Length: 500
Image 1 (cartoon, rainbow, N blue to C red):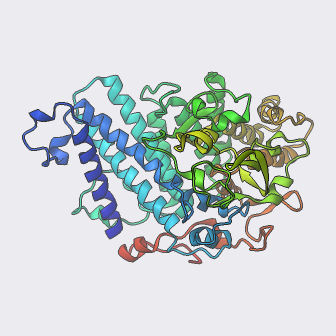
Image 2 (image 1 turned 60 degrees about the vertical axis):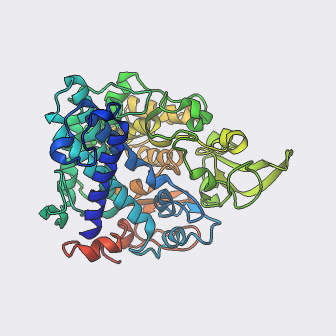
Image 3 (image 1 turned 90 degrees about the horizontal axis):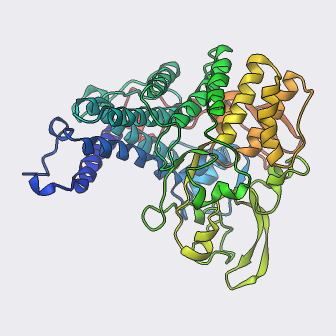
């Protein structure tokens, strides 16, 4: 497809240009503009640079401004988010369940993640040809495998049957017009990449934010949990696999819950403690941009940032939290008031629940630029994945209760005990909805479970037919997002998802 061709071509140009600038011995090069796949991958630093380029694709979906931000697509699709930004039509279409294939949010996911896949394919194919330290070589291959799996894991859940490309391609390759692969084939490749990455000697955690063994096992537990559910329904054995893989992370002792929710959005605590894997940002160098989106619209509270009101929490959802839940208290997961930049002694009541778990107070009040990372996997999710998977595989064991209750204790909620398997199942779901809210997790859970949480009646119900508290009703088409118009137009082998 033309768009996919451009994606792969731009990925190669970005990689070669980036790597050219990073060479310290550039004066030895005769003609640095003539890099090709055949003559480029010759040095250890080339291996590092191509893997670095794969990470870059994590960032574009978090970009936010006066047109909203791609990451919001997965939040508005839950019915649990609101917006004040009337010009962000992409957000409004998703929130109102009138989305279409021209939505730029979906195109950003597709383009960015296939660019990451293209660079991962190059790395996996070419790094073994480079003479270099074997431990470093294996580590870089493990990172590339994980990232390729991450991008495919996101894309297959968002779009369904999509092209599966695992080799480097150029502008003449027949794979530039690929057939879509089945969902089962894509998951098989994801599992292969992650299980291979497990064998490549990655460190269990990495304070610099690179892929670690903890990240690989965490994602693999999530993948197995999803494979047990919809659309594959691959079998109850996948619950056991998910529980086993999550338990490996738990038993490693390398990660633990923060003692304060403040640390979830502390620049000083990124890549540490509870954070297993994050998209990396650095103030004034590669700053994150979602601060503008989580501020109320032009209320004068930030000292420096624009205030777009791009996304905030559905009030009915927050009010459905269990009585006494610390996460609903002021400046824990949400904020409902803030001081004014014109007078920091004056506090403005905002009238809604704005998202504090992504709020960089230092950037808002002092530095103008945010170095806050975006959460991709954290330890709380591992505990909840183990609890859910183990409850399905083995029933309500002491270990299931303990991992679930760790989450509840931090929220100042009483331990649960004595529940049936069915009761415990829904209790675990509710904790996932609350604990992982606004981290791009809930919509994925809704689709794999085919369940939605009715915030007005405090119960779970079928996903298809679920009515958002503000009106729209979910239909079967909302099990997937539309494949971007440009991709379908330029590749006749792609079929648009039903209902779009």
